[in-house]
Amino acid sequence: MSSETEVTAEDFTQIRDQVRDFVRTAVVPRENETLDADAVPDDLRRAAADMGLFGYAIPQRWGGLGLDLAQDVELAMELGYTSLALRSLFGTNNGIAGQVLVGYGTDAQRERWLEALASGEVVASFALTEPGAGSNPAGLRTKAVREGSEWVIDGHKQFITNAPMAGLFVVFARTADPGPQGNGIAVFLVPADAPGVTVGPKDAKMGQEGAWTSDVTFDSVRVGADALVGGEEKVGYKAAMTSLARGRVHISALAVGSAQRALDESVSYAASNTQGGVPVGEHQLVQAMLADQYTGVVSGRALVREAAAQYVSGQDRRIMPSAVKLHCTEMAANVADLAVQVHGGSGYMRGVAVERIYRDVRLLRLYEGTSEIQRLIVGGGLVRRERAGNS
Image (cartoon, rainbow, N blue to C red; front, top):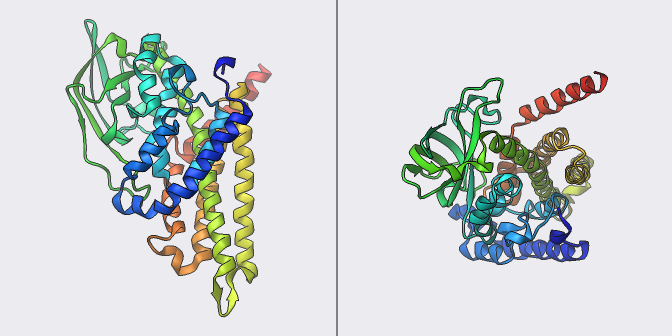
């Protein structure tokens, strides 16, 4: 980040404290309202926009706060403490969609979209996943064909976050067969109101109520040459993959925040609830579960901070992001499972925080690359790094 957009440590502390206060005093008490309505309350969305949360990772020149990834993850750990639907409202604007434009968009593309994303006027959706292509886009079937000065896009996407409210789709499409010149995948900016764009009904999901996803169909959607991210077919795909790596560190921080909440709920329950006249937390096996939860949370937090520092410095923007996502999302799942166990039967009841967390964090091991894909990236990357060093 250039010096003109740096946020000082003192300023960032104020931003983080404000977000922490907002999450814990305004959002946490209304989690069941979000759950029951399958929607974040409008006033909370407006408050998030007024705080600059729709653009906290977008540079200040385009109306954002200009936080780097090391600061981003500190906010993400705060946002993960509550219903993940809140973060979902603005996560794509700051993350996998917004960063494509910040890092690789043309000047005109940045001017057209970034201020609107930063203010929350426009919500962006990252349209990658298809029935046959998810964590690995090799099976991508959506096509973009050049016709004169335009591109014509046809295809079907699924599980697209924020699609029902999106104003902009960042769309992966195949422009050529894979070959020596590349994988033949480009990325396009498609306004949601473009003729031929159809958004399906909201998906009914296991968890993360209020975080909307749906199918999106592109039927002979015509966009101009200026819709091609970076102005070149090969640029967009590289941009998207780089953005995904950054997003994996962010998701890891969310997982730590959710795990911290599950731990706090577990400790509170164990200290205040009794079984047979004895506080639950006096039982050694319960203490062992709390110890495992705590160890997972603190190790995850340390790893997130290290991964973010390595990303910002440029030391590792490929292997470490996958390693931290693998560790932290699997850790959060374990901590949430133990939280339900500590609570006993009450932990299985709808409306109890740990029941929601248990369902919410399950998705973290799937999106922006499954745990299995992260293992392949880490293992393969380590082997390639060693062979390159010995060649």
